[in-house]
Length: 625
Image 1: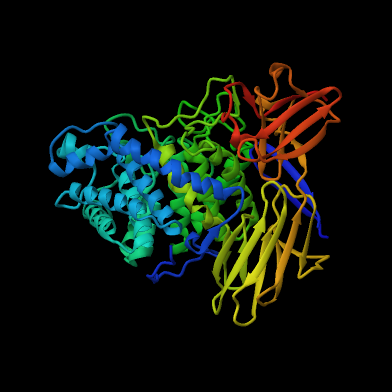
Image 2 (image 1 turned 135 degrees about the vertical axis):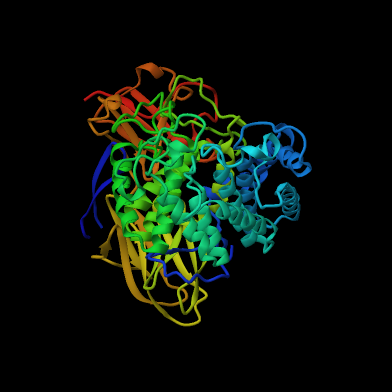
């Protein structure tokens, strides 16, 4: 087996390991994308495994109902649209609250794709009718300004008008793909045209205070095939870094906080607000792919190195500071005070997926997986009804999930993220089918000339055994199968139809199998998944003299409820790790007992903490060398 050296992907964690061994859019684009890989849309992927299927069920049973109840009954978010339609009444809440309604609708749309539900669809239609009624004759839609002063529209770049419009566009595209209904899509088109009547070359300058519109305009372009929306996204990106933002706000504009300190193609370090940065980078990646903008790609490569190697937590969370919901200096990664907003972890998934599409490099999928299983998944309770906004890596026992927040971006973010995770499992390119994530599913994959069905069976992330079966091929197809060998993997074996491959080709972290495939062919992959300790980069002062425990893609933590002598917990070598799958604990998890002499420390997956008795928690343990 070939040796595979990987230096990766966890901030300030040096893991240098040696490894052996919806329908597709109906509209075509005139642009030739430079993306190397096209994701297989999750509408073609039916997830069926013991890890994700219960979460998707809870999303339908609990997450969406909580969001709908909050929006309709416990906050004024839907009432704002009703009042805006009447052009009378008060606006309740914060000026960006429309976005939560749109994100929840996007989650409803994604749920409908794989779980048709007439009642949920009627609810979505009811909301969309309210949105359409709230739209003003000139195409503008934003309940805050409609109800508090139309004369203030487009006077403050930090008031999230384009941010809210962007989330509406994403929801509109999602709902159109799910149902074929275009009422909200038409509302979004009118709003986009309204904005372009006012802003653009030869018109007013504008720098959105919170990025999001850029990536949304690309989605609108891809579904309408109207190139002007792509061009407008590009123009908005190019507006940054020229001093326009500081002239367009009522208050103080901090260019670094808003990613406005220099033109985006010159960026090298990530600064400011974490979620804003993620949405900016997603927009840059989307535009770069369609505009063949090499300068953007170069900047994104520099930014990725800065984030992942100096400012990312072991959990894949980003944004260490509560003060700016974002970044400070390199290697400043406190544990108790870690911010790690759930939205930012989801943003890491979005961004790294796009970077992988551009490059085919597994390091992006390694980070995506880390953020997904740890930083993002911790943001929702096991039942699916409570949410974290902030995700620290240590707690004194006073940090708990809540049903909702005044700023409710994270619950609505989770509501749209969970049902779309099938987007990240497979990809296709001219020569290859890419297997990026190991999740039990059945997927229809268009290989160009033929559509094949892939059936993936696995108990991942609790073990690394994966079986991939080819079905429904009428005739043989020559394709590469590219299977990601995760960065944490030290040993693996692979076989096709029971015949071992002893010296597989590895390219950018992917094991390449090039052959003619026929129905009934089976690939079996076994990834060794032992528990291991991880040491932080020595420049992370907070973790000096400490170690963390991870197993496969899962980062572990210790909770006080399992470890009564919590304050004295210390890992001591040579510790023996005892790994046990407990089907009745925390909806079924593999626990790790670190046994050293007479002492035992019980570890559970980080994503599952704060689902039992209140108590202290920590990821990084004192380590007695």
